[in-house]
Image (cartoon, rainbow, N blue to C red; front, top):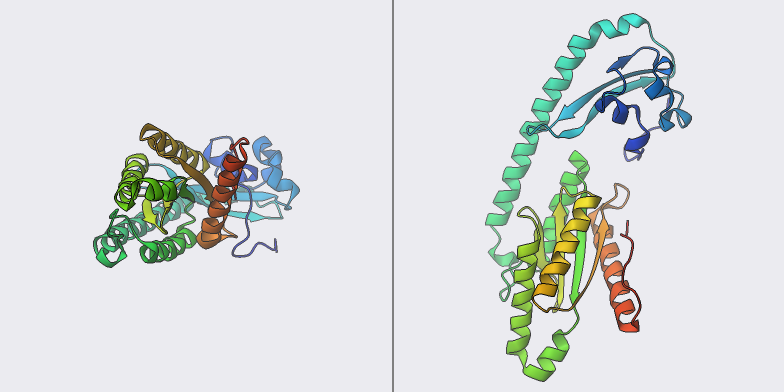
Length: 274
């Protein structure tokens, strides 16, 4: 009756659940309007909610994956709260199933990376464009299934053509290898790095929120600076309505906008594309 369908996006910060996991409201609220934290939640101005059930679903390491919840436009009898033990058991069972699936997904990632010789760039040993596209497809499926956040960072070296023209292709190859080493030193172990073109690199930051994405980008910029490598860098966050393919395109656009501003001599601080 609420018109919420698969693919609908609601703000976590507006929800009852965000308040429930912070301990500001109970797991079961037969009359949610009587609970201050729920009565003041912005979601209540978007939907008519008069009763609420919500339980956290946690990963094995104790971090929050999400919640299982229910809402209704009518207040419910107070006896609804008598079922809290059963609801807690169901939430715990779902968390166990989820963690089992996450372990399988992690094992599959590791297997995918082991069988990858054909997907490697011969010079840098990073993934090539074929490998990049395959990993993008696989990770997009996981993002859709588990709701994982992800960030894509696009990098374009500024001086490869100049180095090749002035010092030869051996020097150019050395620049590319140095850039690959810088990227390896800056990203996390779970992230995917690919050389997708002559002087173009992409990084897929897995299970990475906006704050983490900005930190990885900053580390890449610092690693390049330390090695005297000039590059234009842009990044974008995956959104449920976009997916990783469009995110990759947005990161690329952001990077080229940075490159254009660098050439024009203007400021290069850009907001994150989304």
